[in-house]
Structure formats: structure tokens, C-alpha cells
Image (cartoon, rainbow, N blue to C red; front, side, top):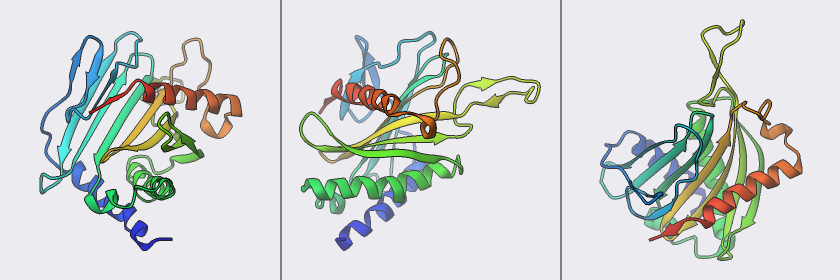
Length: 227
């Protein structure tokens, strides 16, 4: 392995920690049913249309004010969620991603060395149940991943055993890709019980279900407009 790649998870882990403690600067905008990110690096049609749609977003900078991370979540009252997280790439990372093979290697290193460790701080028992490289419309590679988050749903169920309520488990397909100088993480979840029965966890999903999750994220990706 190229030794330059060994530093990628370290760089991103440090970046994600720094951004998590940074200062909130501003928020994005919505016009004619289309959302534009706080950094104006991308826009997309609002992807959730159920009752009670809410949009939460923000942007943070590292301590030097040079690298930024933005995030947005679109969610409704029935547990449907689409989220986009992004992080500007350090220059030393950008330089190794011109080759598709290096980009594929970077996406895997980023997932296992930075993204999942940071997410496990909130949900230690999360599990990656599926991953594969997919090809996007421009021919560039992306990493499709299914992650199970025990107790990670915004939906709460009340039972005799849990009279105060218990958060449902959540399965979230993710699509990791790079556009220009920005790393993106697109994810979705459908955790509601209305007419669907118990949500399918990624570890129990069949090939058809995984294909549906993948197709949904690719369709959302194809609705993006990039700066």
C-alpha cells in the first residue's frame, strides 16, 4: 500500500474531531423546493416529502478556519430520513485521488479508519453489514455501504417493557463519494412502522432489498447539482 494512504484515516479522524468542536457559522437555503448547502458547493431537491418535513443543517470550520464540514438532514414525522455530510479535503489528500484505484482505496480507508470510529463514539454497537464499489454517472467510483445502528432511529416505541420509550434500531444505506475537493457521505433511512411492518436490518436484507437501497441513493445523487 502507498504509505501516503496510511495517513488518510488519521487526517480525516483529526479533521472530524476538530470540526465537531468548531464554531457554527451559518446555514443553507431553500428555494422552489431545492436545498442549497451552507457552503454552496451542492444543491438538491428536498428528498423527503412525508408529513412534518424538517430540515436541520449547519457548517463548521477547523481551528484554522481553512477546512469546512457541512451537514444537512431531511426528516419527517414517520422516520424517513435523508442526510448529506461533507468535508473539504486537505491538499495532501486531494493529490492522491486522481487515479480511480487510489480513490477507491481512499474511500475504504476513510470508512473504516475515520467515519465508523467517529460514529461508534455515539453508537458503539453499530455494524457494517454490506459494502461494495459502484460506478456513478460520470464513471467515478463510489462506495456503497449498509450500516446498522442499534437504537439509532429517531423513532421511539412504547411497550410494557419500555414504558418510557425505546429508540428503534435503524439501518442506513450510505454512499461515499468525492466531487472536486470535497468528500461526501449521503445516507437514508426508513424507520417507520406505518404499513411497512418491522424495518429490515441490513444484516437480514436480501439482494433485492440491498439493490433497492442502492438505487435510491444513486437516484438522490443524480439529483445533485455541484458548484
